[in-house]
Amino acid sequence: MRSRKSSAVPEQLGLSWDVPGLMAGVDEAGRGPLAGPVVAAAVILDDLHPIKGLADSKVLTEKKRERLFDEIRAKALCCCIAEASVEEIDELNILQATLLAMRRAVEGLRLKPAKVLVDGNRLPVLKIPAEAIVKGDSKVQAISAASILAKVTRDRQCLAMHELHPEYGFAKHKGYPSPEHLQALREHGVTAWHRRSFGPVRQLLENTR
Image 1 (cartoon, rainbow, N blue to C red):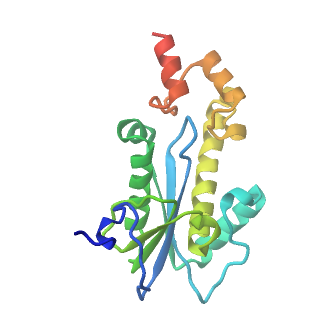
Image 2 (cartoon, helix red, strand yellow):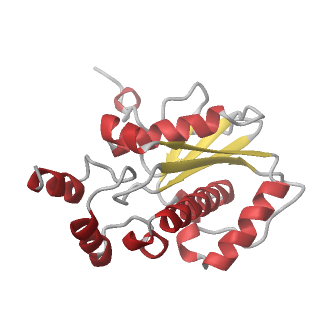
């Protein structure tokens, strides 16, 4: 008879012990949009240089996120921002591409953490003990910091996309399937930034063949 412990879901490693050493928080931004890469960040905070105001990036104003972005980069022991491209999203699917971006962020850290805490309920493949924490971006400061780095980075990418093609309104909707974005897709077609595996984009391409 198999023990109850051995039947645990493999995607989530429940750490019932405290691993000594550095801890990294990991989060992503951009799973839901129709366009642009998915961005992930990994952060190891410095206990000697605390950062006030860390929270889930979604509850912060843009101004606060931008301020905290600079403070995290200045005060964290180390951090890394990585992404998975639109092509990788279409090839792998958005979940696997997100996990790939997370793995790249962790592997890109200058210091090796002893454990990794990841927002959500799925874990990337890592060589380091890791735990998935649902709503971790509102519970763990290092994950909050990672969510801010990922969100600000992706928003800046959307602003760059907007400057090149303002007719799509990327600065406003950040690639999400808003009515304005869907209308722009119908009027102007699909760009190289759009995820062709996502329903609205795929349907549009099929209808124009």
